[in-house]
Length: 189
Image 1 (spheres, one colour):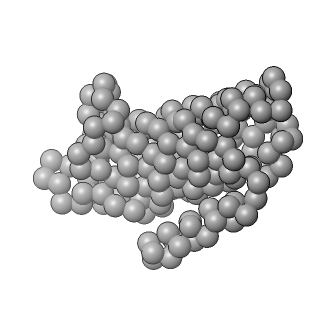
Image 2 (cartoon, one colour):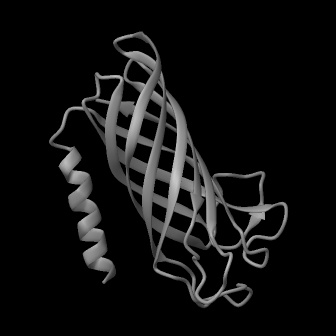
């Protein structure tokens, strides 16, 4: 099941490679689960991500966007200070489809933009035998909505995104949705 989901994810992201308007970006990520046993107050699941997305009609003010993201965050919540250091991690594959609008265009290659996505998140791996973990049974697929703001400066991109989950991620635990924020930098071709 997971291998067919990964193959489907790679297929969807490769569709974008045939279009003009490819965006590769990477950065830091921080997640909070709404369940207080999974994420105690004042803590977060920090990590990194790498993503690819395509923009259909990238020179227009309004574009359809879609892509894939790989996210690797700490399984156990830690203090919010260090965003890069990771120990035992959860690995997510995310398929995202949405729209982007250029709010301010300074010239053809420099703009400020907003975007919104729907996302399907596939939990690929987690340490299911961790002795101090609050839970060990997770739903393999969740979903959410993402809003973001970004800037294109020539071929360099800066993006801030906030994802809110609306499907429970922990089996048989109501109110166990994930919320993530991501800050990334990338290159647009």
